[in-house]
Structures are given as C-alpha cells and as structure tokens.
Length: 173
Image (tube, rainbow, N blue to C red):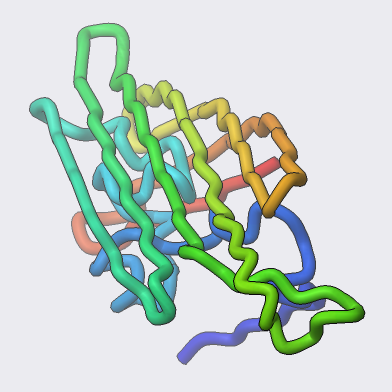
C-alpha cells in the first residue's frame, strides 16, 4: 500500500505538465519509480541511468481527453565515464475558446492554444552498490499570450541493497 499527501492544488500553478508520468511502468507503479533503473525514470531520478549497459532510446505519444497530448523522447548512452541522458517532453493543451467577463460563453469564436515543453540533460555514475546522478532541467510554458520559463536541478541516489531490492531517493528542484 502507499500513502500520498500533498498540499498542492493541481492546475493552479505553472508548469504542472512536468508532473505527468510518461511511462507505462511508472503509471502502473503509481509513479513510484525513484528506484527504477531505466531510461523512463530519468525525469524522476537521474541516477536511474547509471547502470544501463547499452544505448537506450524511448519515444512515447500520449493522447489525453479534450485534445490534450504529450510527446516525449529519451536517450541514454553508457560510457566509461558514466551514463549520459537526454529527455524532451512537449505538451499541447489543444485549442480553447476564449471567454471574458463580458463573453462568458465564448460566443466571440476567438480561440487560443496552450503548450509547454521541458528539456533534461543528465549524468549518472555508479560507485559499487551506490548510483549517483545529476540533471539539469529547462522548462517553458505558454498560456495564451503569457509565457514563462524556468530551470531546475535534480539530484538522485540509488542504493542496491540486494538483487531484488533497490532504495532510491531524489531531490527535484
């Protein structure tokens, strides 16, 4: 069982799309992939790519309701210096009718489009049974004529406790 607590009001802050989980495994696990050792966990814990043995590539297209779509692309490459990864995600919130105080039903037929994207560059290395990773994140979102940009730093660790048990911790800033 899991416990979830949050004080956030979803949809009331900018760049909420970065919280979308774009992996089937992550969704199936209730987004509990901090200890996952795979490319799809790169946005949650950059240490997740430390143990990849060959180049991995992942592409996904998710179509939500009301013409909302999310596209993502990830690649991770192992080297002797560690693993390097890149992730790009794009959300399109579709075409929306403009409403105003005077035109609450949107009868003016004026529309606008909202969209956003994020880019992540990551590096991870394993040190015996401990994996460490760092990633840099760039985000941009446009809501009608307003736009915003942000940068972030993510840090992650994973400890291999046994063949069947990995402990993961991440800080996403």
